[in-house]
Each structure stands twice: as structure tokens, then as C-alpha cells.
Image 1: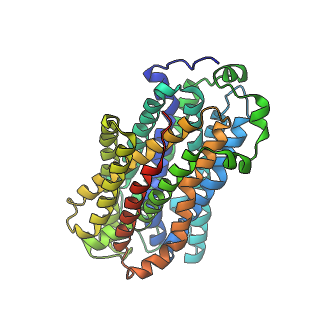
Image 2: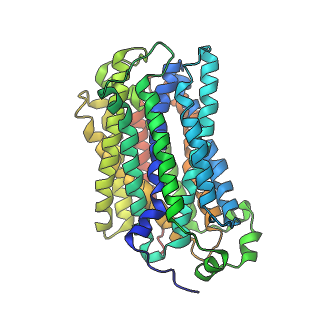
Image 3: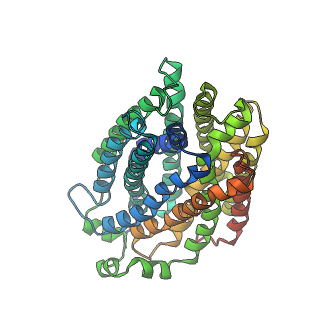
Length: 433
């Protein structure tokens, strides 16, 4: 077997650059979906049900994309065709989703339209996102893999910053941040339009700059016979998966359940804690929603800084666990900080956890999967450890909200506790060096 060659910085950068645009789309979705559906008229106790679709689409789409792309060889590459098609669909849907309340239809019909658009958006984002992880697994050697995922993490967080700040920035330059009841403000609509434009430009850049190996070159660097690549189904792959796959998955369960509650309830939590309202028809609520986007951006910037600190830990599991503990503390602080600027502190702490969640699980798992083959299918299946906990959390969200007294701010404490449990589970992982 040939050793995969070292890639210079710019080749590693090009492998992941399109992720910047994909993450802008993902940031706009995660920061604004609850805001959009609350503006359209959704009840807070049913709000988490709208969040079932994104992870459900992920758990269906990403294994399919992984498995199909393992067997796809075209003149444009192995993974890139799926990336490009996913991005095109995402661009179209991003132009439709924020207009769900602008067509003069009834509230129920607007919610259904928004729900269908959200399903298509998350399907396409997942289709565009997964190939980036696979490209690193295919073309980067073990020595450089952590660096490659760190670059991907940097681009991911940078894209998040841009996406999160868009509504705040557009409001600052004069676009309306309020709209008639049931209609999404122009500041949000134009944020989605600009995000769509950047997404397609970034994906075109990666498509032009990255040249994937042909089948013969791939087999020289990845010594798995074509027969083995063709033979196993998903159930067989899961049965034969290394124990690290499942142990990291347990950590993922608690972390991503906590993140789902953040995405679902944090706009209302910040609005309730700082502005004293959860009424989406008020100017104060829309101002709180914009400020939450700024806090998300600060979280992402904190993630970039913390990501540079993670390699300084001598013990990788210690770095992972400490990061999750800091995130748990950050979540728990959100309901107790009534000053809008002091809210920066809890979000910076959450950013520490986010940095670790983006890079470390895939480092552990791809190291453990060497020699197993089916890298794309395995990474697609591993996405289930991101999607399943979100689905479970979304189903239970309304019930848990009732148990904590109906206060969305209390859901941040639930999220914090989930992260602390995840940090304890890190210590059962056995890292393959």
C-alpha cells in the first residue's frame, strides 16, 4: 500500500473551503428556524416537533450519500457530484423558506409550507455537507488528518459567524426587522438570499480546485478490495463497527440532544431572560432574536480560538471532556444573566464545547476505522449519532418544557446537564493512536 502523500496547506484548505458556504446555510437555519416558525404562529410547546425534520433527514440522507458515493466514479469525482447537487437544491430552498408567511395563505398552510421547505433544506444541506468529511477520509493521511479537520472546523465556525450575523447586520444598514403578523422580517429574508449566493460560489470553488483520485489511485492508497467495498450492508457494517464508533456515539447522544434544545429554545430563553418577553409579535422579541444571532457568532468565534488550544492538551480525552464541561456550565448560566452583553460569557463557554464536538469525534472514529473499508458509508452511519439524539430530544422537548414549568430559559439548564453527562462518557473511549 502506498502512503498517502502529505498535502500542503492550500490543498487541505481547498478540500474543505466549500464547507464555509454550507455552514452559512446551516447557521442561518439553526439560528432562525425557531424564530421563523414562532413568527408564523407556532406554539412553544410544539416548537421542538419542527426540529424533528432536520436530524431525520440527516439520518436518512447521509448514509445514502456515503454508500452511493463509495460506489460512484465519474469524471467530476467520487464525492463532489453529491456535494454540488446538494448545494444547488439548498440554494433554491433558501430562497423560498423565509417567504413562507409572504404568500397570503392561512397560518396552518404557511406552517406546512415552511415545514416542507425545512425538510428539503436540511436534506440538501446534509447532502452537501457529508462529502467534505469523506474527502478528508479519502485523501488525507493519518499524520495530517487532525490538521485537516481543524481547517474544516475553522471554516465551519467562520461560516457560522457570517450566517449568524446576517440578520443583525442587515437590520443595522436599514432593512426592516419587523413585519406584519405572520410574515418574516426583511432582515431575515435577505440573510437567506445572501447565504444562498455565497454557498453556491464556495461550492463552485471547491469543485474547480479539488481533483479526486480515480479508482486505480484510490485503491493504491486505500487498500480495500472492490469486492469488500461492494459486499456489506448497513446492518453488517454496524455489527462489525469498532467499539470506538459506539463509545463516541454515546458522548454524541448527550451533546447533540443539548444542542437541539439550544437551537429550539435559546431565542425565547434570551428574550425572556434579558428582554422579559416571549411574544414574537413585539419589536423586543425580534431585537432579542437578532442579538441571539450575534451571541451565536460570538460562540463560533470562541470556538475558533478554543480550537487552537485543544492540540495543547497532552491527553485528547481530557481536552474533549473539559470542553464539554465548559459548554455545560455555559448553558446553565444563560437563564441567570439578565444583561445582554454579559450573555457573551455563557456563549463563549458553549463555543468551547462546540469546537470539540466539530473535530474530535471524527478524529477518534476515522482513526478507528482504518482498514475497515466503506469509509463513506461508515461516516454516513456515524451521522446517526448526531441525528438520533436530536430526534429523541425533539420528541421529548414539549414534555420536558412542561416539566420545567413552561419556561424556555429552563431548557438551557437541561441542555447543560446533558453536556456534563456527555463529558463523563468521554472517559470510556479508547483512542487508537
